[in-house]
Length: 244
Image (cartoon, rainbow, N blue to C red; front, side, top):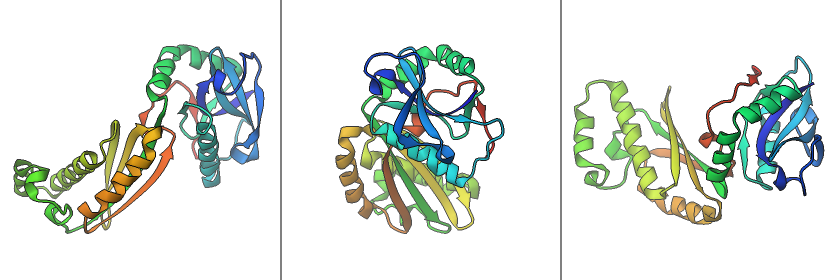
């Protein structure tokens, strides 16, 4: 039997006392409306649904996966699996957990009481950095801005501009950890910024974000969260990922 996996957590968060057999989580429906179960693996539990040999995954499936992970996140510290992760059998699932037991334990300990906030920043093509940051240039690093202006390559200039902007966001919001990606789009550049914060500090973080908005102009900026820590996971396990 194949199992579609949503996330991994500590068994104690879902059961009183350890169990050996998969158990139904009645309050949840997973991908395709399938029942959601907890598959116990020692101290851990993997949240799964039974899945056929050739399932069809759609954009709706992406939302169903995210919803299931988010509902579990309300109950426990967890490690989300990538959308489309499938274990081919009971033994494959147990083996993957055994092989990564130390990493999973360390990651759960590191992420306990933590949440992820996600910021998206859109900078339109043609705006110089000093027209984006509504602060004196020396506060973003005068030497850095000088180097920025001297760069001949538009691509390098774009990357440097994004880096300076992400550094300013980091300075204003002070996350515990961050992951930043930048991509070029037709109308400019988009920064995707994931911040790891203490869950009990969400309101404080949101307040900092609101206060920081006036520091930026000529950009589109949005905040979502709190989310499970999707961007702060250990390396991938040896499991199959379905194409969607």
